[in-house]
Structures are given as C-alpha cells and as structure tokens.
Length: 348
Image 1 (tube, rainbow, N blue to C red):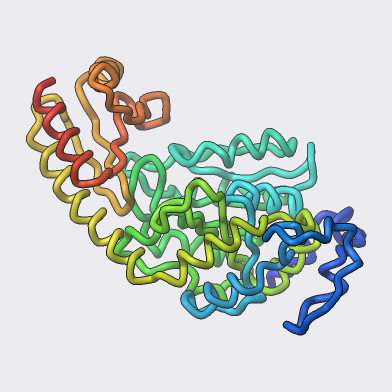
Image 2 (cartoon, helix red, strand yellow):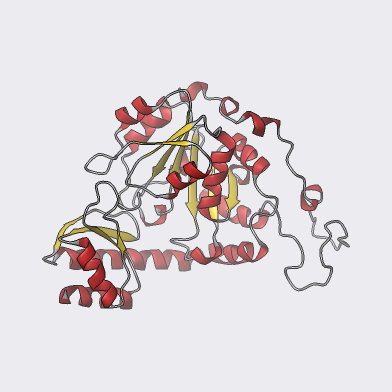
C-alpha cells in the first residue's frame, strides 16, 4: 500500500551502489561573479555555446517550479519525455527479471522502451469506453511489477481517465505509477501534479512539445518526490539538456500569455473540427477529446488516409492499434490548415 511505500525497495541494486559521475559543473556552480574557468577542458573562446550547460537547468527549473507550484527538487528535465521514461526504466527495472504494465491503445514508446531495457511489458487493454480496467490491472501485478504507465489524456484516444480509477491504482500498487501528461494543457481535468505530496509512488511527466510549441527542441519534464528525482539525477547523463534548448525553453515558458492564447485557439479549432467531422457521412463515430487532436472512426481508414495523402494532407491512421479499427487521428492545425482540411474532407 502507498502508506508503506519505500522507494529504496524498488531501486535496482546496481543503481543503489552506483557512484555517479561528477562533472566540472557539479563541483563548481557559478555565483554570478567573474571567474576564469579552466576546469572543464572547454574551448576558451566565447561563441555563446563554448561552455558546458548547467547540468541541472537551474534557471529553467526555477521558472517552471513557480508556474507549476512544485519545488525544483521535485523536477528532472530530459531530452523529450522519451529520455525521462528511459531513465525511469533504467533506475527501477532489472533487465530480464522485472515487468511493467501498459494500457493499450496508448503511446507506443512505453512498449519500445521495455524492449530496449529487456523488461517484460504486460499489456492490459483499456475497456471499450477507453478507461483503465483497474481490477484486471491489479490482477496482472506480481512481485516483479515495478511500473504502471498511464497516459492521460490518452494518445491516441484523446480522453482523460477518471480520477477514481487512477487513485485506486496509486493506493493499491506498491510500485511506481507513471502518469504521462503530454496533453494536459488542453484538458479540462486537473493535473496530477497537485497529488505529488499525497502519493510518494507517483511520477508525472510533461513536455514542452505540445502546448508550448517546442517539439523541435526536445524538452521533457519529470515531476516526482525528491527521493525519486535524486535517483534519476544519479543516472542521467551529466549534460543531458544542451544550452540552446535551455535558452529557448526559458524564453518560451516566460511568455505564458502567448502560450495560453495559442492553447485557447487550438481548443476553439478543435471544436470546429469536431463539428465538421460529425457532419461527414463516412465518419461513423467521433471520440471525445481532451487533447489537441481528434480520433474518428470512419468507414474505411486505409482508403480515406490515402485520399487525404493525394490531397497533400497527412493525418495518422491508427487502425493497427487495439480497439481502434478504422480510425484516423486528426491533429488540430492552424485556422487556415483546418479550413483546408474540412474543405477537402467534404469532397471525399
């Protein structure tokens, strides 16, 4: 049970015994004064990026911590959420011994990372209304189950999961529950960040790739207890987030108003797209979305996908995913792009 959860009980023995690499910038942190840095074997000629970046991204974390209402000690930044997720596997899952649980249809990298790290991936299908089947999930758990991955709002279905089911998992599972909130900024639901203090076995991941419009810089964020973050910091590469990424991310997160305006516009465009899709004869069902995309069941997904390609529109055919037969996923574009898409869809 969560009340007796002890993070040390699930950390890999090799990680417990590991003495982490200490970089030059671990041993000396600039205090803002003028110093002559001759400690890190860098090229001394200033070009803006000749110095190693802050290994702990302190300036960026300070802003994020204030905006999100968490401590900087509860944060780890990585090269996209994918690096963060990989670090979680490497810290807590013993290869060829432990297992994790994923809930298809969901984000495919959870399964890929399980394969890369030689960890068994136990799949428990969502229910037909795309909700976690909590009793079946808990029945699949054994002593070697270390992680349960939950994507909410979920990709590719678009829905947010009910709070009660996730709470049951957090309270009943003596391992880590990883909630991927890549699309939380488009959701009407409250972030699970507000529950970090309540559940010591909770990890929340977010990203700057979606609402913040920074997919090209690859910046993912992990929020968890200080104990979990200290373990992940122990095994992360010393300078994992480069200087240019840190600078660009800081500029963007400081411009909160612009980000929020774009989110509002995306939500307005999502509503317009949903209305248009509902009026098309070949759309059989539209699934409720809490994200910046819409999943639609159509008469023939392969045919419609190819027709759109011929019109120079690329969407995602999700028909190979469980419970997603004949579905297309439409990312919400700009007003101009959505207008063009809707006009093309009406011609099909």
